[in-house]
Image 1 (cartoon, rainbow, N blue to C red):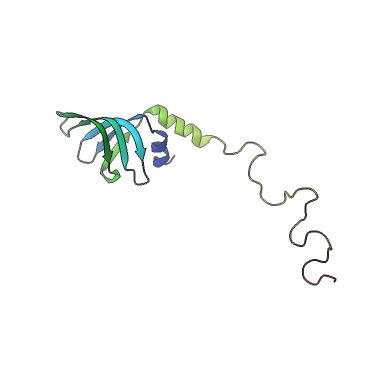
Image 2: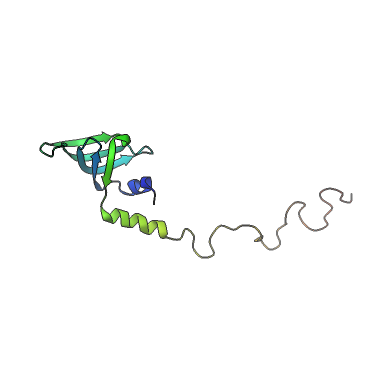
Amino acid sequence: MLPLSLLKAAQDNPMLVELKNGETYNGHLVNCDNWMNIQLKEVICTSRDGDKFWKIPECFIKGSTIKYLRIPDEIIDKVKEEAFKPKFKAGGGPRRGGGSRQGAPRGRGGGRGGGGGRGGKK
């Protein structure tokens, strides 16, 4: 399970973000990108000491400032289940070699002894 796939699955769900400076942000994940920059809505910011709180309608957090993320267990379980699902149904997977259609020409030249290719009769 990759962290970015987990974040993509967590969109529109509540999460807690703690920054390296000690501040915490509780809100709903709106979006994230490949650098783990995060956009939250309906945010409650808590100071490093835990004595001051701010309610913010929306905020952007740079990925390099994040210490850790707390995501609901339901989201983690959902991503785990999706990771272990088979990618293809039985018999419906990708085919590799040897499975040519019956009656279809094989390889170059279109068939047996057709005179195509090098050294053929003219």
